[in-house]
Amino acid sequence: MGTTQLESVPEPKYWHLRTVLTEALESEFTVGEILPNERDLAARFGVARATLRQALEQLELEGRLQRRRGVGTTVAPPRVGVDVGTERQTWPGAADDLWDPVDCVLAPPPAAVALALGVPRDQPVHMVRRSRVSHGQPVAAELLYVPQESVPDLPAIDAPAGPARARAVLREVQRLELEHEDRAVELGSASADDAKELDRLPGAPVLVVTTRFHAEGRTAALSVATYRADTCRLTFGASGAVEIHHGPERQAS
Amino acid sequence: MGTTQLESVPEPKYWHLRTVLTEALESEFTVGEILPNERDLAARFGVARATLRQALEQLELEGRLQRRRGVGTTVAPPRVGVDVGTERQTWPGAADDLWDPVDCVLAPPPAAVALALGVPRDQPVHMVRRSRVSHGQPVAAELLYVPQESVPDLPAIDAPAGPARARAVLREVQRLELEHEDRAVELGSASADDAKELDRLPGAPVLVVTTRFHAEGRTAALSVATYRADTCRLTFGASGAVEIHHGPERQAS
Image 1 (tube, rainbow over the protein chains, first blue to last red):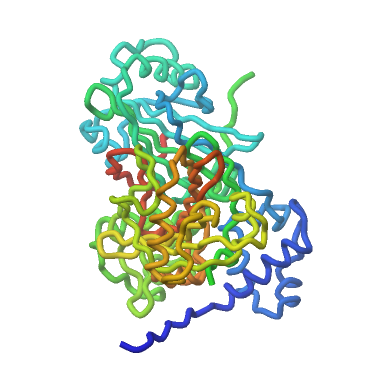
Image 2 (image 1 turned 120 degrees about the vertical axis):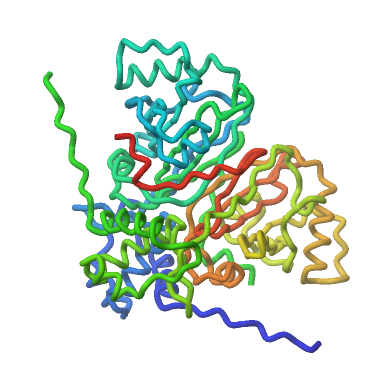
């Protein structure tokens, strides 16, 4: 009975600074503008360098700042909406596909992929590497795993690797009737290969979209796509132009 | 012509350590086990504390480690698949809804939300706060913004706030015919309110899912839901059990 004392929310220093910095960014800076160096910023806001760095990392996570080597920290443009889920389900490589084939190799997949595909651990599968560019910027890198039994008529001789091979695999997989696809999105970090393609450092935060393509009653292909988390907003459904900035101003109180 | 020298990928120290640690976690530790303290770990791997901390942060980002105050760093269980996109589109609060209403207030929304809803900046809207629990853990917090014109018959007198008010708003909004919903997913950081509900510190990485509900030719409601990025994998489509762990082993080479 009686009233319940609401637990007070601890507000760490960096979080308070983050809020102050957000307001400063909105009122004093324009997109692309370079921020003063860390020492000057720390002095201006009367905080330790470590606290400043934590707040800057926060704002980078939220896509408000970009740190670029050799340039410094700049005010980021709004995130780009990148369409992921289409209402019409199609195979990778279909006519209106936005991905570019980069390479293709035949090799045993990681254990978890082999399990998801239902192929023996040591059995080589086609691994198609593709990349996606939006507004002139690399936004995503993909590995598409295609078991050999999904493309039985793939010619073995010509173009053993490279983009031509990738296109051949994509062409063959489209002969199967796609029954269904399902998708998962989670936070991850860029592998060395992905990082190079995305123009980031290894370990940069990425949104990992895993898509399973079902055909002939089994998983006929599996796509693991990593999107830059700093610049991308993944959109699902017809009109993806949801433009909401997230921050402390979202509080209901 | 001739061969192209492949640009070598710089591998920062923390990234190498992250790979080594991942292997150690898989071979020597079990889920829930507490890691040795930072000093001992740094000594064992022959790295500076700062490098170790960067690698631990990486593994936390990937959902492999959890840092819990008063406990230490533990090996995380696999992420929980949380269904987000259903093929059948429904209003929030429908019969099989997985969210619990927590509170409801009438107040002016953030500027970006007002814009998305097409309401004047200072016009109060219903802000329904809901929470979602999965496997006994809080996984997501939501603010659902409902303009007053979407629920014209809402009784004004009884239950001005609280869960009862939230249920009344949800009940009323379901009278509208839902035409379409679209969704965006992006990386964000937990606000103080969300952090409390999700049992995290403010600024913890979250996956922000923004959903627009269209009815009567306009955006009749807008949901901003924040999911714990450390423990959740958002699933779209009927069968969401995609279980792929991401890491450097994903490389095609």
